[in-house]
Length: 205
Image 1 (cartoon, one colour):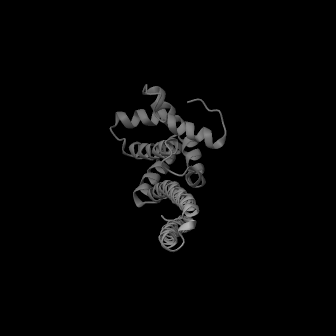
Image 2 (cartoon, one colour):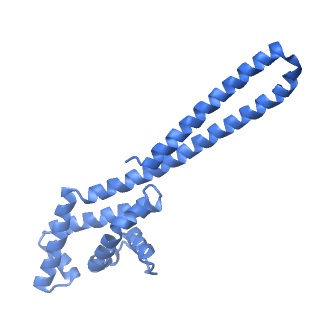
Image 3 (cartoon, helix red, strand yellow):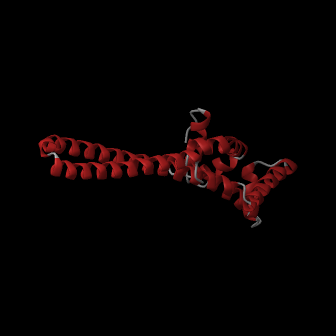
């Protein structure tokens, strides 16, 4: 996704670069003309030409730097919007539906999450749980993208903050069981850290 600001910066950079080359060309021609027709000014021009050339090079380098920074920013925005697009995909909607079914099962059977998981494992019927785990893994992926600064956090927070909060709160027992009961405390650690960061809590990970 390309923003208007990115186009403006690119256009400005191109204008600066073209003007720099044109100005350098004009100075070169002027230098040749004065050398032939007014040699008494040659010494002054020898000072002016390198000065303006250095300025033009500096402007070009700054323009390239700004373009690179903007390109990196746009890359992060693109990654953030792709993650949002994935969340809104039909596949993710099916996973969300399975998560809602789990909640309904827990209410109807008045079971704890741990009992529900153990029963599903015993009956070899873990399809809904696996779908829920895919959602949690996707939220972990978002956490890692933010931590490694490959996606724009501001955009992701504006869209996913409520989702992260809801899934961490509603399925806390599942997260806790898979971390502690399964002996893997690193599982979902990044997700819990992101939740804590966004809501300003000091939740332990």
